[in-house]
Image (cartoon, rainbow, N blue to C red; front, side):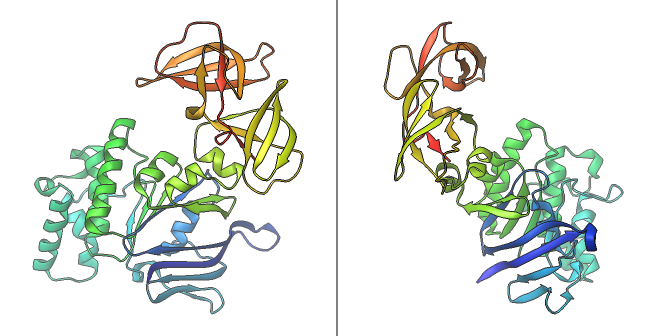
Length: 356
């Protein structure tokens, strides 16, 4: 059974002629023990969808079910208040009470539920131990690091064992190094505790690392959904391909198309490529991931000869930029070593050179 089901959800800001549609018929589900990431650019509707599930935004049409409970039904004009939905919420800002200790912050929701003091103390102790915070119960938020504050916010969301935990950009307040560590911690915690989680993020690396399934939103609609691997390796649309990776776009002319096999011309050179999506017109958008371009100092098949413009050191590799003499073609590629100035052949395997 689904822990969460959203059916044909519509939500507008404003009303009448000034209504601004934010969600335009979104449907999704979340299985027990599954992590689904809502991914997309600013304004795509991902945070609005999360807030609608939480009961913090009022949709116009559609349905929301948590387990077997219907919490929103547009046709019946029914909306269950947020506090009755029993969902765990982790906000982007963590929203910790500054005047309460870690233990008091975590216990707050249980006190509102009028739980017995002994049971509150037991539950708070258990969840703090699970998150490695057992020794910090008497500290105040300002005495904690950013990563510790984040874990307190998660503990507060988990303490009453909700069916679904909602995470709104949970790692965005952390610095780059801590974010990588927190990403691994959060994924391990979710798997270990068997949580069902819906997470909003604009970071595709974060979405791929933590989630079992990604819903990519674009302008209020789901552009594509699937496992992180399928979204990255087999995108259905140009939007998905561009959002899910680091890419090179090429100016090209379509020469021939036979099924998925495509011949294109780039700067006077004929290249073999693979058609993706449903585009059948003459306007094409060829694209290849930066990591799929192979650099050669001698002529190779299915390649462009370009001059090296610059190289940037990234620690585990160099990222090199190549340009044509007139500058109309630019390609980025990775190299294990810093390349010497000169011309190189940039090979693009036909199955990795996608045409949309």
